[in-house]
Amino acid sequence: MLLAARIVAAIVALLHVQFLVLEMFLWEKPFGLRAFRQSAEQAARTALLAKNQGLYNGILAAGIVWGIALSIQRAPHAREVLTFFLAAVVVAGVYGGATVSRSIFVVQAAPATVALVLLWLAP
Image (cartoon, rainbow, N blue to C red; front, side, top):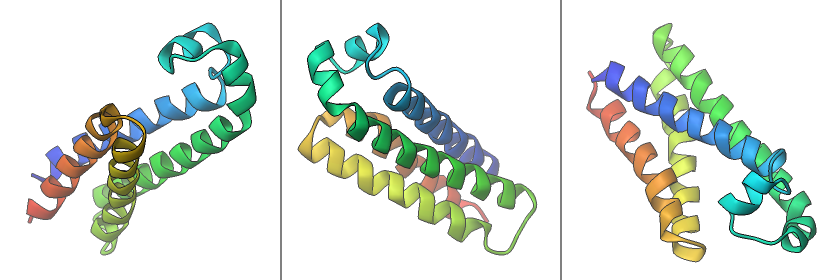
């Protein structure tokens, strides 16, 4: 069960690295414009906000990777670290799903919730 939790948590971390790249580096590029269904003008107006969001997504990814590394090392506080960062993803995903688009809940909160459940079911 712990291995499954680590794998799902790693997927969550990879998703957040992808969000970082999209928001910080591709926001105003053709791929980013298509991904977020916005015009070049809209993207230009919101680019700094997107970079800020991307940074936060990177922090979440780093925290999850840290928690996975602690788990592999069998550090006594690994579960708590992973729980904190995965729970932060769930909260952000629920909020984004409620206020922006349901797809945010599906892509962000649901996988993090699965990872949390697996983590806490592991011995």
